Length: 114
Image 1 (cartoon, rainbow, N blue to C red):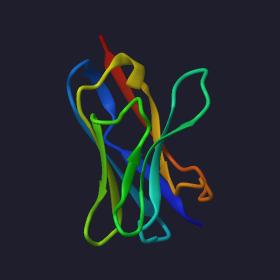
Image 2 (image 1 turned 45 degrees about the vertical axis):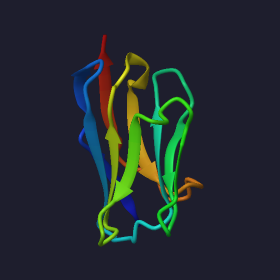
Image 3 (image 1 turned 90 degrees about the vertical axis):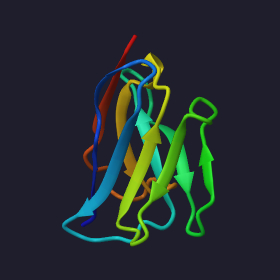
């Protein structure tokens, strides 16, 4: 069974940057159509960014211009570059495909202090 593990989170100050990574453990997949999601305390999980097989990207309005989704050439690792972080970006970040059909794996906590 696919297990997706996100890493790279942490406690940072507003205005700084982080880069998250996601890889599949135990069962390798090709990161073709993929997405980043986040879930803040007390809120539903929301879609943050998507990337298609040919490389088209899309972003939630709240992160557009600040976040960048990408992957390595081997398509084994998915990334989320996050700049100009805001306290409202505080959440647990997960990766999955755009329909969320892989099992939800281990997220990474991002906490942005003001």
